[in-house]
Length: 90
Image (cartoon, rainbow, N blue to C red):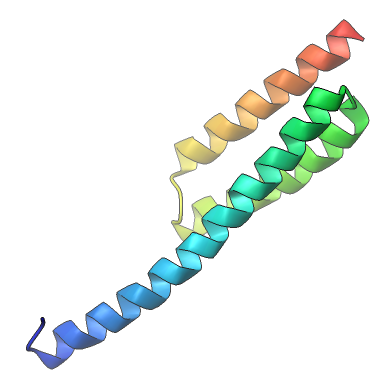
């Protein structure tokens, strides 16, 4: 257990940040799953709409420092690649 006042404050602030990061990461996973469900259904139109939502969510998370910028870019790229495969197959 921390003894210094600043250490105790840091523990409290870290916990608040951790909880916020958990909610943001959860929303990221949820929106990615929605895009992938649309892809599995073969609905390229819906998947494209969900991809724009996912891109926005991923970018804001990267800006806030919840995830790294490269992670955001990688996820967006993989989803876009899957959507493009559906469009070319149809």
